[in-house]
Image 1: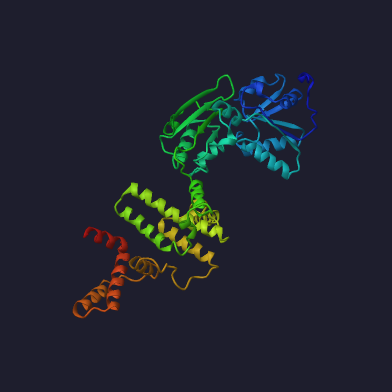
Image 2: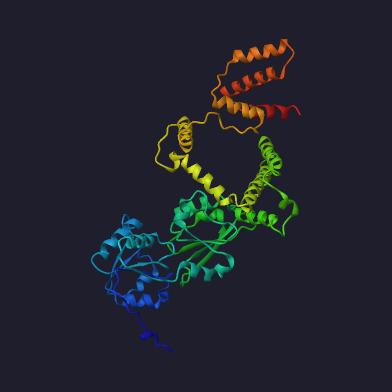
Length: 438
């Protein structure tokens, strides 16, 4: 056999070496990492709170970035790049350098920009150790990997809930609580998860509980990982997209394959009204069902467009996402606003800028809106004055003469303009009254 004790790496002098310390057990250090450490005089550590640090050569001068503000990834990158100007530097991080360590990404990017040579020495990651602990095949299950700090910043998880997920570096109860708030947008509170502590070490521990209990997790540290299995019922947009695409495929449903943008128009409108009906009744279980029917029509329209090479669902999502961000600079930018009126004014200014600075000569109101709703939009955009005397005159005219369609229309429009001035939605008001009389 090849004698391991005689094996060593020829270290070419480099400016920055980024070394992975492995998942925790010092025995998991690679031979390459051991050889570099054996010939080093000093080392910079992302943190001393890692089991492998205790196994470093005692004569090695070690400096750690544990305490703020030095612990900030940008500050770490700045310090490592500055040290590289005077000689070679070794920066050691937990696990694999390229798994969930933002300071490494910053160092590599800045070193590349400054033409400073770098070398990355792999380490066994928390993913390897957690998969072994959970007996999980990441390729067979389509494993997703998320960093707890990044997930905690999100308002909607960038995850497919139909795929398993590992959340690494859940290092505090506060981070766990913030991750819970994000995950509960798509996962039910009773969804089972597993906490993996110190994976791959003698202290390894697995604990299972309901997602709702995640914020009660105590004694979290940098070796804490949360495993979130797939939803019991497939519930991702990807899943629905696959179903719709299959219905439209050659081996799909003949009826679905025959549909066009225009043939679905009537059914689409009916689904919108059925959503409104459940809202009127405050019937939340049926609202869930009707929103699904409406979503089906949206994906069907996008699938038809994709097949014709017109546009894709991702373009639909990208366009509305960019529009929302662009039109909410007070949320996604640094614009300051005082109240809703300024928000609406900014919105209109941004819309005008998107139109090349030109004001539209006519209000962009869909002609297929219900008549009352369309009339109220026209009154709103045209700032039609709510003249109660004019409304009374129209009603008086109808009472003393045979009613003509135009006269009734004028009276209705005057009434809708009055409703707009009182911030009453005319369409809803009439629908509720009609429902009450049935």
